Amino acid sequence: MNYLSPLNLLWLFPILGGIALLWMLRMRRHDQVVSSLALWRAITPVQKADTPFQRLRTSLILFLQLLIAFLLIAALAGPLFVGRGQGRRAVVVVIDNSAGMRATDAAPSRLDGAKSLAGNALGGRMRDGDRVCVVVTSPVPHVSLAWTTSRTAARQAIDAVPFTDAPRDLAGTLAVAAAQFAPSSPDARSIVVCTDGAWDPDDDAGARLSSGDVPIEVLALPLAVPRNAGIVALSARADPITPGRMRVFVRVLNASPTQLRDAYLSATLDGKPIGRYPAAARPNAEATVAFTVSPPSHESVLRVAMQNVGSDALESDNRASLVLPRGGPRRILLVSAGDSALERAVLANANIALFGCPPSGYNTVDVGQYDLVIFDRYAPLTLPPCNSLIIDAFADGGPAIAQQGQGPAGELPVIDWSGTHPLLRFVDFGAVHVARQALAAPAAGARTLAETSAGPVILASDAGGRRLAWVGFSPADSDFTGVAAFPIFVENALEWLGAGMDTVDAEAIGTPFAIPGHAGRWSFAGPGGGASGQCTEPSGAGCSVDPNVISAPGVYIFRYGGATHFLARSVVNEHVTDLRARDHPALRAIVRRQNTSQAFVPSSLAPWAAVGALLLLLLEWGLYHSGRIRQRSTFP
Image (cartoon, rainbow, N blue to C red):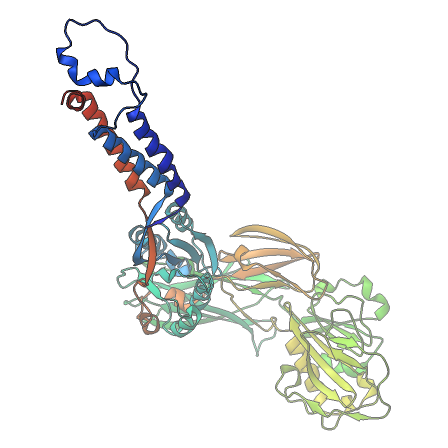
């Protein structure tokens, strides 16, 4: 037997002794005239005693009073019985609220069904002292409720999990769940995943590694064969034959046991209808729809939607949006004092509209209307937020950091270059020599693509949604312009720095978005609401936006750096559209029952002692007031 407060047992001596002492004290009597003493002979010795105490007589009431006092004091001492039993459990409940959980084939929705599974698991398994934590899968895996022992708080957190339109990240979710357990915790650990089970079996291996050695139990909804169809990919590419036009490719998936016969795609450009295109597909098969559009001279929004698909379990994957770059020739600004070789190489591309200005007039130009800026032997203090090519100059936030000193005199051959990077594809520097080069070191995140014995001569960086290229010598100070590699390099640079103008793809909900090269305030508004913030990064470094604020499919309007841009997000994920539950052998291999390891578990006996004292007190009261105890004690 153990006690929480063993010192409280010391109260036994004064209290039990006091009760016995009270029974030994002689009661003070009062004289009373009676007719005869025959019936009072038994108490005559007590009346005649000269001492204040009498001999302690055996009494049931005395015994009950002593026992009641003993039980109450024992209860105050907190008696504990320590035995072997099941220890505390720590359970992480994972709620799958990815895009597919909006499906209504499990009425009212799959997410509501998953919440019911989680609630039933808590009600049937969570005992006093057990801890629970709630982790949510989308838009990014995160903790919805930290550790708690309250079932009410856990149920409220589960009921508050919202719908999202982002795909699930199973491996990332289980990594977050496993990270909630303290390595030294003695609690029995487990993860309970409440989901529809409609994820790719290939994700099992990553999920298994992410969860470590924590036992996992998957509570999957009982589902019938669902009927659903949706858009799983949307992209647009520059038409190689007709300048200014773009070819659009839409991939649809029919994840149903029946054929889509009369389904079609409706397309709009900036809200204006541009056509209807058949989208028939065989059961559990894909189909591709292609058509062409002519984007206007400004950023435009292309929307496509599946129509006439019949009974469909998930509606959010029937629409997709895409932001198209401005149509017509690409507008390029060349800031230079004059370089005819560079101008001719740029104008060799028929889709280029070249605009020039001297370095002295750069500050008066609205850079926002250009797709690319080329700085020739000049660079401003701050680079613009668009892609840039910098030749023989340095700027803050650029890919090159100026070094002290001058390079060695004479013609320096290019001794090493990367033929795998898009900037140098098919470019041969074997016959190129540099007469004068700027000494530089790569900035953080920049990659060296070509170098001489004096250091790097071509650097590139691709971060914060912006691409920058740096050339450490002027073409006029080399024989670069006299070889075939020069026009190839210029064409590669135009293509790489113009990324996003020739090919654009629809992006899924949850895809990170970075504000390129801007320090200042930004704001956006769209179907998921609005938000604003302050980018404190230095200009050129970019600023990321939390993907949680872009949580609904559609088109968002972003404003930053004095310019307005469009951002489109869609469901476009084949694992979301295909709602069929699958077998997951890797996770099934680690599904186990709750950890039943034995532990020393204390059980408190204080409530039992208190209840026993109360019952004995009631017994004493009843016996005393019945009169039988008093009669036997007075008349032997």
